[in-house]
Length: 220
Image (tube, rainbow, N blue to C red; front, side, top):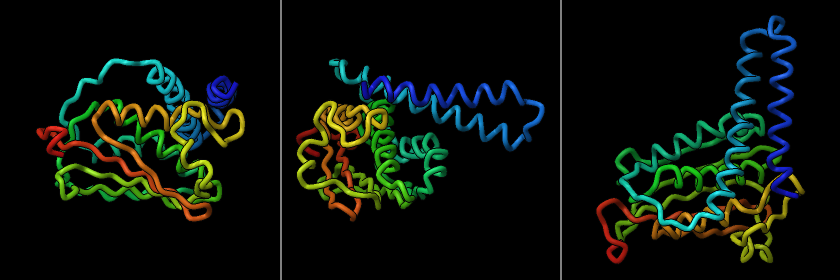
């Protein structure tokens, strides 16, 4: 039921915006038209993310890994969620050094991980807030990226369950409970890891760790 609502809600929003554009195209200003189109694009991406989560949930093959610049991946995801962040009064601050080494990964899969984390963070800040993404190189030569929000935080009793499939504390239709489970699976297929720390009322930080391009897992 949650997944059905997760798809139905953005489809309804797309339909409403498209119908409004169709019926009153000549009356709207260019700015209003662009806003409606941006809303449609954002809702399409939201529905697509749910479908990708379902596909990733059932996929078993190992991803094809290439050299990937995480700075570019984060920048693309930031663009995708910009409209939703603006609507929810969330500021996104990216602190990814230009000289950050590339990692060994699949660009689409890594984009999916960051998209899941960004959307979760935005939803965790219903009254607005700050989302910060920081990247750095570890002493061992791996890459760590922290995704930190100033949201409601996660109760201690739920910490051990957040990566379980279909686990969600959101209302029906507000989340499928697959995003973090899929993200964990993607990171494991990349020989990486994802961990979190959180306290209610103090926000949440997810830490991603990936192997740099050209390094073996044993040496990372």
